[in-house]
Length: 540
Image 1 (tube, helix red, strand yellow):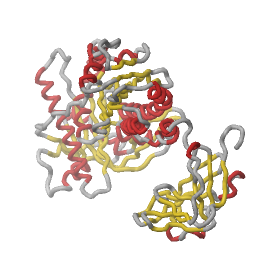
Image 2: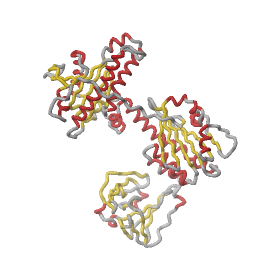
Image 3: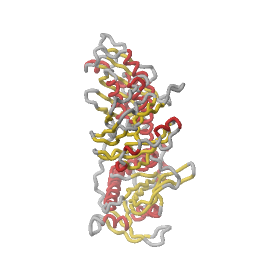
């Protein structure tokens, strides 16, 4: 073993050894080798001729080990189906691993069992864990969790497996969200569910929250430990009485710090007769820092997605988060384009105090954006007091008509709210809002444009230019919603005639376009304008 306590050893396996999957042989050899690596279970490697080549499918996956080198992978055909990346091999191993060069090793999903003709080599169980099974999982298993709920649920499992009598666990994580202050994940052993609840910023002023251990720990006042099998509580919080009534015997709340100094909270309740032992809390305290980093990574990704959704829109946000960030990177798609513009905004900006004008703009955006989002559209850009949105069209034959109908429904819903606002006249909410909406369909380029250090993810192309110019006809002709002939054709693709309440307003010419365009208007703005309520629950 080398001086830093980490080593690998390779030796021959005496006798014959077979890899079994559901009782059937996947590989068999009397020349297998065993690789022993500090703190890991033994791995058995087989010469290539011990495996039927027909069961191996090359994979693109590669991984790197600083001791063994780069591993190449194969998918493996088994009796139960193909196991993706089920085998690996070091084709050009580093010096320490030359003894397994070109040999194949199988994942646990493939090698469900081994069959030895002699006793297998001893597995050094004492080195399989760094200090405990719990901390071992934190270092090598927790990072596989894809969501915060999954991580909380697995943490609950591992605490119980470690002999810690945890009956309930809560993880409170503060958010970076315009409406949500924080997220609370509650896991209970009896239901084995990790329930996620989100709280609005009203929570921060709620007396119930202020009088809670979550608030106490979040304010950097330290942790809370309260045995519940006593008559007098040092920490006399309502939640503690509730847990005692439910059968809990002990309670602890610990800081779960993030690297930026933000203090989140993890709480645990025990139903063991004697509550948490010193050893129990020692194990938990030992892993809190590492667990906090895992929750931080998952929270940062969630917060990043939220911010991108908020500022770019859901579809665009996902694309940027997934790496579509290079200038010029984009694709040509077909989309329905919705362009809306506020009426009399210049005059209102001059007449209204700044705060009132901003409130009015936000009211206008609420009117337009809510139906677009409800109907599956993507708002790409605010251009001053204008809104550019798209409804991407898939390759499905009837999707043109479907997306056109959704865009028209969005426009009608928005206009219905505008008409109701106009009927009220000047109210305490501010002056009435009026606007025009243009609808077009065409090919656009959807991607990144800008300078080398400042990009915008948007749609560009003649179809976008036409939609923005068309909207000016709303004011000139007195129509609230106007549509291009291409858009109307898309609506007609579900029938043989012009859609109901859609009529031509003649041919018009637009700057930058040589030929005139036949334009249509939409009447009968009656539509359901109810929007779904946001689902926000309190942190408990």
